[in-house]
Image 1 (cartoon, helix red, strand yellow):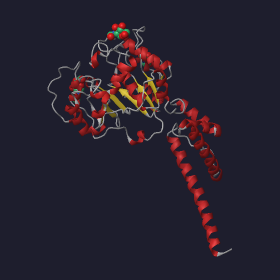
Image 2 (cartoon, rainbow, N blue to C red):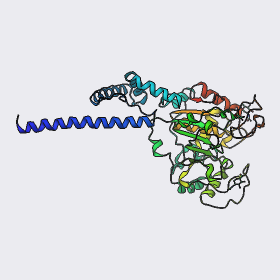
Image 3 (cartoon, rainbow, N blue to C red):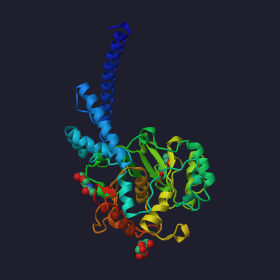
Image 4 (tube, rainbow, N blue to C red):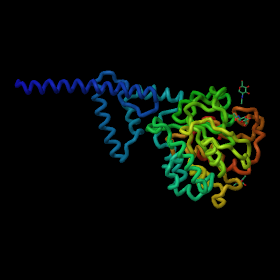
Length: 396
Ligand SMILES: *[C@@H]1O[C@H](CO)[C@@H](O)[C@H](O)[C@H]1NC(C)=O
Ligand SMILES: *[C@@H]1O[C@H](CO)[C@@H](O)[C@H](O)[C@H]1NC(C)=O
Ligand SMILES: *[C@@H]1O[C@H](CO)[C@@H](O)[C@H](O)[C@H]1NC(C)=O
């Protein structure tokens, strides 16, 4: 053998060894990632232990997946999942078992959007959760007053966004390839169902207003990704807000935006007139933890989904959706799967608790001037029936 050939031979061997080593490391890493996020992108080779076999299987599978994706014209995790289940049933079962115990099945990409488009053909998915510096460019919200848009409040919104400087979820959540969200309503139906662990298994846990976590974790979980709140529903003590959770502001009335600006800039609240109950005079959250819910979701849920009267786009009798339904609408645009818990008033059981955290009874519910509870319930039932959302507490 010539020396150059010898050298080449040695180099090749080294490269092969390095490749095997590198691949096994990478697999180890994917396995680790998989363990922390059970439903995330599955790796096809998890249970194979021999590195050589791993490389071969991996290469083969990748090719199959590429072909599969190409033939269908789109890359997709669901295809990967199907492939995976036939190739590695052992892992699939363990994963499925784990998932069923916690969040219920592997994450189905695009599930909610596909299902809702089947019953509302005009539904188009892209719509950011929160307002950002380009908010004036969204024609949908430009021409409507709150709660359906930002008209007349642009300057205040600008001032708020200047202070918050952030307009997104955490990079960690944004990078998920498939996102499961749960909207936790405040209904008494959540009590004593021990759903806490199941709720905590979602990527995004949305809570509303003053629904407490402390003291109720067995039933409602501990995780709070965001709390969607209007001024009258806001906590005013630091310890009432979960750490690392976002305060997502939703404005019902024009003056609500002003309230948030006052809280951020430490301005004195001059008058509490116009609020339907007392509002906090300070907000114990850092500006970087504040977001403004995109008012588009009010507009869409009211006029396009529930079918409430347009009233020239103004707030009027029975045309304001409840915050819970607005939150579901937001999630339909921004999550792959949307589940709900603690939704639904059962007026046939007047002695049942209205909320999971207080002793007020169902019978205390009043006919609302602003909301149309029955029409909204009809809409939510439609979503459950069409498998757009899953109702964990079956109250809808
Ligand atoms: C939940 O269980 C507690 C303790 O057993 C009980 O006091 C409470 O009334 C129950 N709540 C509901 C809504 O069933
Ligand atoms: C918080 O609000 C309650 C009533 O809503 C009020 O009694 C209390 O003084 C407020 N506390 C602070 C720190 O603002
Ligand atoms: C709710 O909607 C129904 C059907 O459109 C209507 O008959 C009813 O008056 C509405 N209720 C309220 C409170 O607006």
